[in-house]
Length: 170
Image (cartoon, rainbow, N blue to C red):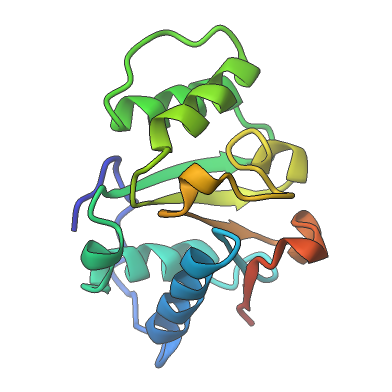
């Protein structure tokens, strides 16, 4: 697997959920063909992060789908968005300093254009934070090979018309 950033390790007592990786792969493939957005959502403690990390580590088919790699970032309730944008851009070999989050968003759009990669944003609490990384209303044509997979407690972070793939745990 070509990880552009660190993916958290699995807990020592981790047990695979039957069929979950197949469901995640199906959702990611559907997102690749449609909106570029895929959400794993459910109540706190349901294992969204662990399930996503297991999927990233175990699913061999991701290499073919995303030959330019996989990047992982934890967003959280009060994210340091500029730092997260910088980290994702460094993972893609962009080293110029960012002026602000708007500049970070523009550089993400530019840097990921034409690539085939999976961006994983873990623990997203607010649509405004998500929008600092990805367009929620219309997928940029140059991002046809990019999927943003995010985990959240909240199903309503993306507009209904976005055609995002929604996978509920729990």
